[in-house]
Image 1 (cartoon, rainbow, N blue to C red):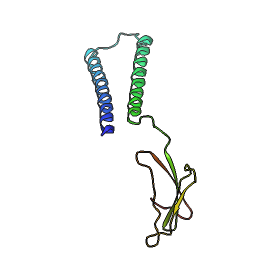
Image 2 (cartoon, rainbow, N blue to C red):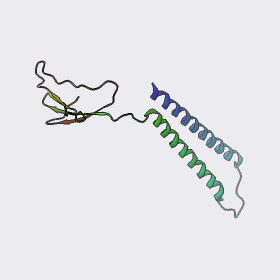
Image 3 (cartoon, one colour):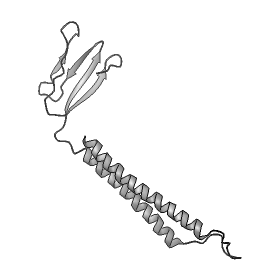
Image 4 (tube, rainbow, N blue to C red):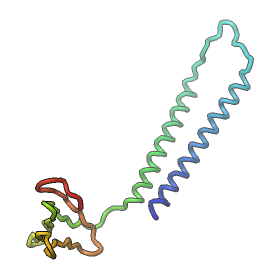
Amino acid sequence: MRQRHIFGTVFTVEAAIAGAVFLAVLGLLAWTLLRHRGVRPPAGAAERSERPRLEAYYAGALAVFAVFLVAWTAWQNHREHPTAGPRPLRVDVTGFQWCWTFRYPGSPAHRSVTGTCEGHDMPTLVVPAGRTVQLRLTSRDVVHSL
């Protein structure tokens, strides 16, 4: 299964990145808790120190991870759905009471196949082998399934 292999790879990469980020955050949290345990800030010190350069690096790293994950997933999705070859053969399918009509608008004679769906008078959908087919379903009366 090609899809299973492709998205298995995507899952592995994204899970590894998520695990690394989790471990980094956990490590920083532990380091901060152990380093500042029981330390009181000096009198007159600001409650919060600002570090715009460090914050900019942090935001940049998050942006790089986000861009990488989106690009990686899109690239893998593109591998799953390669560009199509020739245009698909379109077949217009019209459902009516207990039966179907098949029209081939791309054929030179605009061929149409229908039947009464009684006995052996059944319409037969004919498509070429090895070519993609697009079915356009409509109904004259109620919702039908094909």
